[in-house]
Image 1 (cartoon, rainbow, N blue to C red):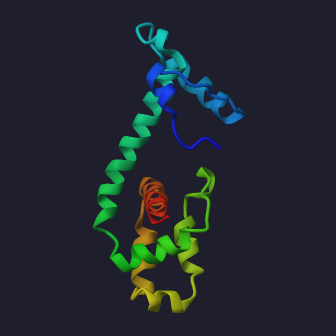
Image 2 (cartoon, rainbow, N blue to C red):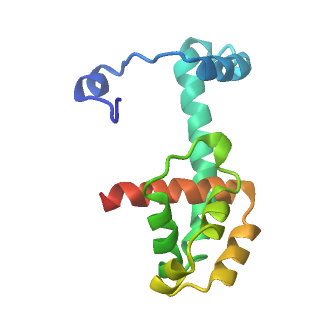
Length: 144
């Protein structure tokens, strides 16, 4: 599995992208929006633009989250997320569900008020839930 763009790909600004069924559906949805001015940019522009929009949304929502959870709550959720892989369809509600299933001892270990954390997780909107998973995945990589 490829985890980064190689130095050669960076230098020549080219890579090979496999068009799986999901990506084909997404490109079919977004490519028609490309104007004549941007048409020459095609799939590269479309993928970059949509990914940039999603990244901007995540940044906005993550800025909210940074002060929303205590260090203990962050550590508890991160510990829970270390062994998990999150598919986009599973993200809504997944951190809340995982936290609800957490053993009482874990809350005590991290000095976390279970009821308060669950209440904060229940209050997150869908964008914030995606941003939380993104943040936990980033923290997981840093922890390795």
